[in-house]
Length: 114
Length: 112
Image (cartoon, rainbow over all chains, first blue to last red; front, side):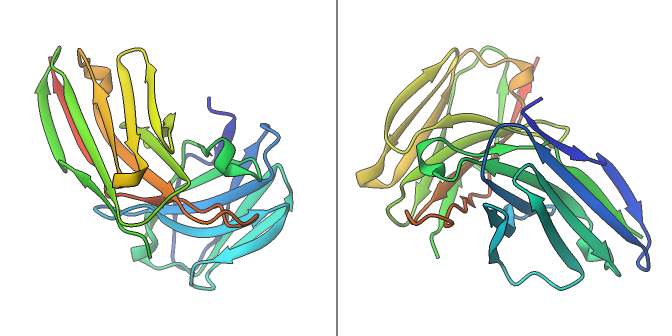
C-alpha cells in the first residue's frame, strides 16, 4: 500500500447510472489530484485540489464532478458517462510544497462504461 | 505546454540483462519523477530526481537538468521489473501549481 487508497478497484456502469469514485490518503498531504489513463495515451490531469480548493480543471466535461470535503478525501462523481470514458482513474496526493518531495499514487479504479 | 518524450517505447529483455530508459523534456523543470506501473495499474514512485544521481538497489537514475534529460538504469533485470515506466515532470513553483506532465512511457518486458 502506498498510503493512497482508492475504491472501488473496478467499476462497470451503464451510461445512465450515477456512481462515485473515492480516494483517501493518510500521508498528511495537502494537495490531491485526479488523473485519467486511457489506452495508448499519456496520463491526463483532470483536477487539482490544494488545501481543499480546486485550483485546476483541465477542460473536463461536466459529467465528471469532483469533490474534496477535506484534505484527506477526494471524490469523483460520475453521471451520464460515455463509453469513451472507460479508463483507469488514478488519484494522487502530494505535500503542498510538492517540489520538495513528490507525488504518491493510489492503485486506481478501472472504469468500464457500457 | 511542456513536451515529455520517452524512449524506447517498448523494450524486451532476457532476465539478468541491463537496460537504460531515457526521458527528454522540452523546458526547464523543477521536479522530475520516475514511476513504475505494474500490470495491475498501480503507479509506484521510483525516484524523485530533479537533478543529480540517485540509486536504490538495482535501480539508479540520473537527471541532467541543463540538458533536459533523465536516464533510468535497471541492472540485473528480474521478471517483476516488467511493466510500464513513466517519467513525469513539473514546471512552475507557485503554490497550487503542482501538476505533473507525464511522458508516454516505456513498456518493459522481462523474459525468464
